[in-house]
Image 1 (cartoon, rainbow over the protein chains, first blue to last red):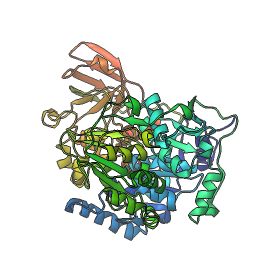
Image 2: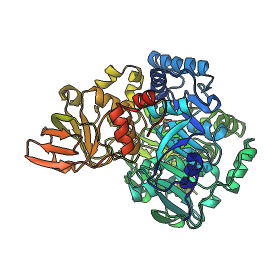
Image 3: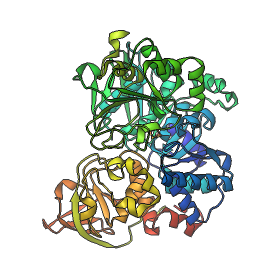
Image 4: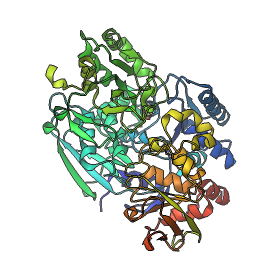
Length: 417
Length: 174
Ligand code: SF4
């Protein structure tokens, strides 16, 4: 019987053939925590008596969630990470380097890897043909210590994205549509495997956006095969030697197969307070926005910033709207500076923040006031997510976000394309 | 992993606190208290605050959180089940759980039980026999079963959590 990508990768790390619902201990290649989850991992490591980690070169602490730190408690947590990483010889990704999931794909993850991270969006790395999943601090502490974890082998749902995208429709719209269709728990305990004629043509950045949000459908992983697009990407960042073709067998067994005709979709919005509360933009009432955020591990990449800049060129952010832009990594920030994207954004009225999570998780750099509305390119819109339970978060693509910043309300970008 | 594991026999008793569907980790441990993650007793004073601002003040040791579908969806923050446990909650009962929250709860020794929570109302007195897998609703005189946990999770729970399991066995022994 053939295997899905998840089954192949887990088998190769378990040293035996596994099938869905088997429980197995596996070797892990990359382990990480961020500044919100890392300090608890450190205290668990200490409780277990580990002052060293098994594979320091692939054990990483990221300072990205409260970065730079807005208050002393968080500064002290950063010190905990710096000290432990220093003593254990681990990698420390400092203030200003960027969001963990972006740095992971830029510098640490290879096709075929198992990646575990104390952050739910660790599934982003699945776009490179890796099995990548989020866990809590204690699991990750054990992962650091032993370079092992236990996994239940997930059944896989195959999602075929077929045909060309309609005008104004982007990868973000596809994944929002999918989550609306299968719901926020439609893939709980399962792996999503993305395939179909569109997926094979999709850029790596679009794949990152889609894999990033797999967890919003409850999925354990969101995986693309690694192919020529992956190879070209690794080549472009000087990591060509790490390329490996990873694909599912033709006779792999899927729990379900979902076909999506991309040509039929329009720009999509997730409405408060759940990601699966989805509406096509044409069905939206006129929702006034106070803040627009373009960035995060979902949509803070160069292509996202370029799409936004192309829309904002020669236009101004509406009065009464704050447009915040957060490049996902230092490399993206530099590339966006060199290509003039940042200048265009600032001229339109945007505020550009240093690479990191920005206001996504409600810690700093853009908390909302009571009754305010934010349209964001991030991945979740739960009540209170951006620091205020009495505010409202809508989610969209960078194109919809940029155009809405100009109009002052959630608007249909196809009007100007 | 051949022998069928059972949760070490223990009986829990308390009142139910009822919540709805989709209780996210943002509702349980809000991001605006991010800086309190290094001070869990303080963070625990805000447990479930955005779902029910009064909950932290009302819950007593041994009480139960009883919810609908997809409890704990969202972030990987283990602080969410940790502060539920620190608030004295004996177990969380829901129709379904998000994956990471479920795993985190077992790792820290908080029982998470899947059952038909429509049959439990707010403030019902419950008695839960973890070993037998039975929830007795004393207020209604009814009984319901919860779905058995995977053996691996029962082992971890019986050891008192993942840290204790690893320390005892000097590695995984699942
Ligand atoms: S950008 Fe937002 S979703 Fe992504 S890792 Fe940071 S806080 Fe989490």
